[in-house]
Image 1 (cartoon, helix red, strand yellow):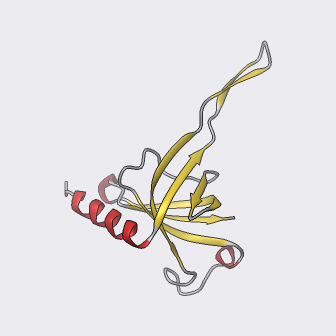
Image 2 (cartoon, helix red, strand yellow; image 1 turned 90 degrees about the horizontal axis):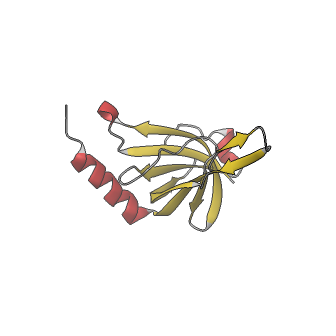
Length: 121
């Protein structure tokens, strides 16, 4: 199996130099007690890294409708992430709150290097 540790570190370094800090938050879920009708809510999960916002049309030939209306595409460094972003997560980037719509990892041999995240405000 190939060693991608150099690629992971290089991706983080380049994104950190060109981007800003990002924080992902996933609301905690809990168990419902049917007898007392109460919910035991778990604490939210968080993960931090660095991201850069990609202008519409850079990764694709034509900007998507989602990007044109208050949306954005981000490259997120995977190094140090304790969770993989997914639909429904909240993302705080450069003082703005975003809602994650999708996340596509670049992960050769199951080793995540970067995530391409689509989000909207």
